[in-house]
Amino acid sequence: MRKLLAFTSTILLGVLPLLAGVARATDQTKDDERLRNSGTVLKEILDVPDSIPQDLLDKADCVVVFPSVLKAAFIVGGSYGRGAMSCRKGESFTGPWGAPTMMALEGGSFGFQIGGEATDFVLLVMNERGASGILASKVKLGADASVAAGPVGRDASAESDATLRAEILSYSRARGLFAGVSLEGSTIRPDNGDNRHVYGREISAKDIVLSGTVAVPPAAGQLISTLDAKTPRHRP
Image (cartoon, rainbow, N blue to C red; front, side, top):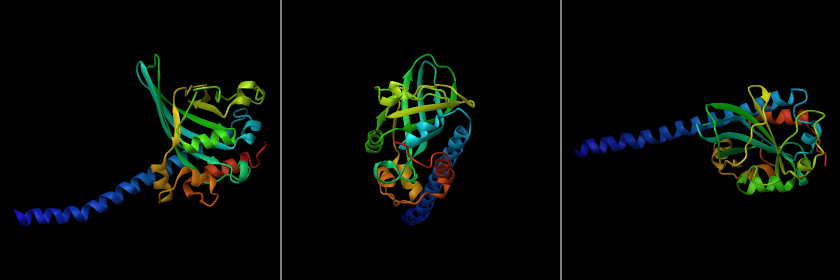
């Protein structure tokens, strides 16, 4: 029996590191796929005429993309999503677009909801205060006037009081159409666990965004190249 236990322990000691390696590789694959999906969603949305107003996009300090957020339930609704945020580098967020931090969206709402629908969200972080708040901790959407649903279309009133006061503007697309789906009550936060998978080390969202020295991972290539192409210059 002792020999059997010793043999079993030896096998486990040899197998467990292999299993841990497989788990890490799986996490890496999932996060790379999220980055690629974020890039695809952003390009598709920005390629549509009259989607997100160009002047607002040019004024944004950061852009957050949540592809295929699921909002589903019966009676009690909820939302869950994973995505990425890229910010302009340099002092006062005026430089080129930098490496993304992974982001998590979580929350709930109450209402008569049947079935589920995946919705793509793009959030524009309009000023340094909004960006700093996201990087520091959770930010609750719809809690006050600092968050507003963004106007869609070239003729939309981008100069409205709500937009000018907003720290974050949210846009949504469901089934290929801009649907005005609410994220009220949900929270967004940096996902440092996913950042560890993507960058292969412990690194905070703040360091990724503000240091200006973190290289863009290959899976985020389309996300960053789309931002560089669609809004290369920051407009105050």
